[in-house]
Image (tube, rainbow, N blue to C red; front, side):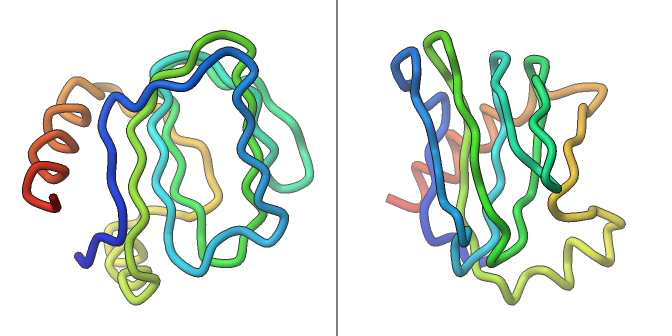
Length: 115
């Protein structure tokens, strides 16, 4: 997997908004450690902590946190979309994994390797 950018436990202030009307030219993975409002498929949903999403290239990205936000995020090359498909992971779909404890540690290690 070719990582373009990655951060673990990345903090943002209350009221932080990402608004990318035409998305990115890569796959974006987000793991939210607190509740956020997210637009996906034309609907705005309030996500609970530990929600995850893989955005496909070119998909609108919008989320807002009313409180201070901490999240893990990664952008990786769109050529990896076939890997996600083989694993049965749908893009532009919110997931609530049963266990997310490993995500921050994994991202911390990958971030250290990346930089």
